[in-house]
Image (cartoon, rainbow, N blue to C red):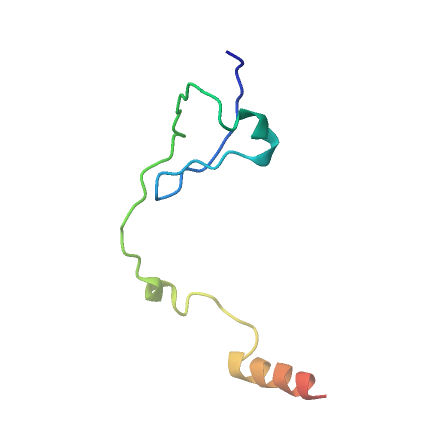
Length: 75
């Protein structure tokens, strides 16, 4: 057997997409060994983004700056 190493994504339907560069493999009998990447478990923790509201000190008034930008766009 000839070893070929490639990284691929297994779709949610279970299909493995072999890149076109490996067309010579199509239709041939193969041995497949799957090594899953070490991915840390995803956290389903809910983050309250409002806890960061008002934590930045801006040097200009946000509404005034926005109006200035809009006036520049209209020119």
